[in-house]
Amino acid sequence: MFEKDFLWGASTSAYQVEGAWNVDGKEPSVQDIRQVPENTSDFKVAADHYHHVKEDVALFSELGLKAYRFSISWSRVMPNGVINPKGVDFYHTLIDELLKNNIEPIVTVFHFDLPASLYKQGGWGNRQTIQAFADYCTFLFDTFGDKVHYWQTINEQNMLTLAGKLISGNKKTWKDIFQENHHMLVAQSKVMGIYHNSDHSGKIGPAPNICAVYPSSPSAENQLAADYMSAFRNWLYLDAAVFGRYNAQALEILRALDAVPEITLEDERIMKQNTCDYIAFNYYNTACVTSFDLGEIKEGDQQKGLAIPGFFKSIENPNLPQTEFGWSIDPTGLRVTAHQIYSRYGLPLLITENGLGGRDKLEEDGTIHDNYRIDYLRQHIIELEKTIEDGVPFIGYCPWSAIDLISTHEGIRKRYGFIYVNRSDFDLKDLKRYRKDSFYWYQHLIETNGRE
Ligand code: BGP
Image (cartoon, rainbow, N blue to C red):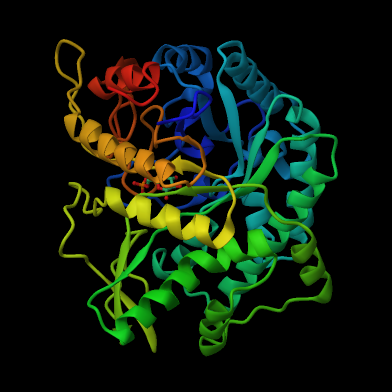
């Protein structure tokens, strides 16, 4: 049973949905200057949500959403450190429209789109970015704090950190990467403190991608490998946000990689003093690991390929089906993951992403038959309900994504939305919105509070 006030929602992120990349004073973010993979759309127009905001919120309202989780674009609101009134107006419009429609805004302040100007000054590797982030967030809390009650600091900091080495193929050392990561952790703690010291009484927390890690076979070595990977991929981030300290097993790996960051006494103080109120997490699938040797790392895959010699190597789980884009599907894994998080931290949970990326087809009569997505979501919601009945408190469920948007690495051919956007990777067509079969299915599910 879902509580009456359970937040049935859906998610997006600014750079993947908004478009208008250089409109009304917005400056480029790292996403606007990065080389996208060949034959893949860039993020310049995306779903053009910036120019369709009222129409889109009307559709979210028709869908019946009780919450909408989106991110604010730093380089739209505060390009080069200076407030951009037109960018701020856009978010006032969005939030006001949501509130008019009784949709709770859930805001991520940073979702993969660091302003390019900061990146050029060293990005998160530069300690000064901590203060820039604090200034930006202070402005957001002052400006939107009366209207927004759920805040998230950094989307998938763990993936951002691990992808830095393993996916983008960049040549940074582990030491550089974990120094950047450390600055993000301190920045996060700092803004949680700023929020708690403000007049606002909402909740603030992190939004990592968390997954249970299974040993590839029942042996102590493989169990140990799974524990190490969990520590390195999951608990490092949540221990910092909840307990204000580094996880011991993760630190052991950092020592082996010669990647222990420089941590000042002031950093330690900031982390210890400022912790989170709830845990938002993205869940797509689980991981499976075996012990020790370094494996081959697949490029362009956020969820696989993590291997640290001497500790663990992730492998494909042969027992799980996969999506057409090769992501494993593990609904029961959601229950395992949520239990692990709740028994470690005892804080309320919110799912901020979960969903299936597929190639949808717009039929001539304007319908889209995405039963595969309905199946995926249905199975996860069934497991979510069981987890709640087990006693794990959930604030809400925000699948990815409310509307079609550009995937991180695979363009718009990999779609996740309840609402279809008529464009392809290189032909913008008319950007018209169509309701998919999953739209009507989720609408009914929300109406009946989780029944179908
Ligand atoms: C998460 C990100 C999202 C989103 C989603 C789907 O990691 O937070 O931004 O894109 O994954 O991933 P992809 O777009 O790579 O299919």
